[in-house]
Image (cartoon, rainbow, N blue to C red; front, side):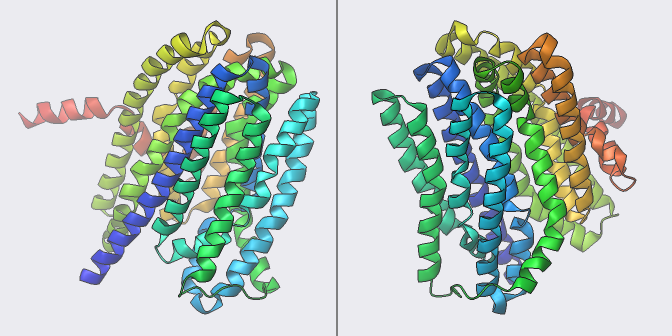
Amino acid sequence: MARITGDARRSLGNGFWNAGQQGLSLALNAVIGILLVVAVPVSEYGIYSYAVALSSIGVAVMSAGLSGLAVRELVNERESNAAIVASLTVIREFFALVGFVIIGGISLTSGDELAIAATLLASSALFGRALNAPELWFLSHLRSKKTAITRISVTAGLFGVRLALLALWPNIWVMLVLYSLEGLISSLIIIGMYLKDKDSPGFSRPGFASMFKLLRRSWPLMLSSLADQANLKASIIVIQALLGSKAVAVYAAASRLSEISFFLPVVFMNSTFPVLLKVRKEKGNDSPEYRRMLQRSYDQAFWIGVVVALAVVVLGTVIIDVIFGPDYEDAKTVLYIQAAACPFVFMGAVYSKWIIAESYLWSSLVRHSFGAAVNIGLNFALIPTTGVTGAAIATLVSYICSSFFASFLGAKSRVAGRQMATAVIWPVRLLRNRLAAR
């Protein structure tokens, strides 16, 4: 029993290091984004935001949905780890090229040569990030602390460089170069750590059979990840095509403020997911204990999301009024609408972990595709008449659809939908239970 407890503790620590590194990276990049609002003209900030948004879609293509599956293969096939890591590197570099071409093609819809050039520069980051396959080897050995410290150090170091440059020479092209270099620097350091590690299997010749095996399993997850990014970034693409870079800047400024809070559900679920899996394994997926724990997770997620949304509105209003200035006045309306999505984003984090626990991976593709379709459709319907406000409404509705309504599209996932609906009335349930106990 002591060994199991130790493994659980290591797994939990692994998750916290991953979440912490991702959260810090998101927070520091958001701070840079906010400072750029002040440091550069509105149109230039719009170009920067557009380029970075499209690059995020390219990352979804480059990852090829392989991260979780690769870790499982590395755990189950220890003797083949050298070939698996080499195969992952080849696959990711190939899909980095595919993503670069796709993003370059999408950027042509902007009708702006500077936006196209900025997008190609930002998307060059894909090739550096694709080299980080050895990081998955560390993850499979529950040693994410080592790689997380590396990424945190690189992110913090470049954050300092960016701050200095913003003070001395605020230029979006320099910022985009640093954005592209960050992933490359981290990946090269991690490769060096991997090769020097005494337990490392190193690299061996990639096995085409294992590569195709991984890809056959991963394509639903890759499509799901791509649909998720399309859902997140569709508004910026359509705004750029229909309204131009200044409108993108206003929308992106509000999004920067609201999206800072979106890493919180990742931390929330990384801390509870191992316990949830343990209860499911010991008691069964139909047990009252497992169902109660899921319901408690949905209850807490929704209402923590409500509190966070209120905090985002209050703090965001002050930042827009005091720091951003009159050019970004319309960003307040966008922020208020987007903040309303927080409770559903938090519940969506619980739902996504439930999907993994139940091995119901097709539901992930369905939910993200549904959200992306709704987002893109509403963007084209609303932006021509209501501008960036319409884009914010489209984003809010798509989040609700992908995090909540999509659960009712599958017979197996409807139980999750009912639990999410129950979470919305948690205070009423608590009051009812308290009155009944008297």
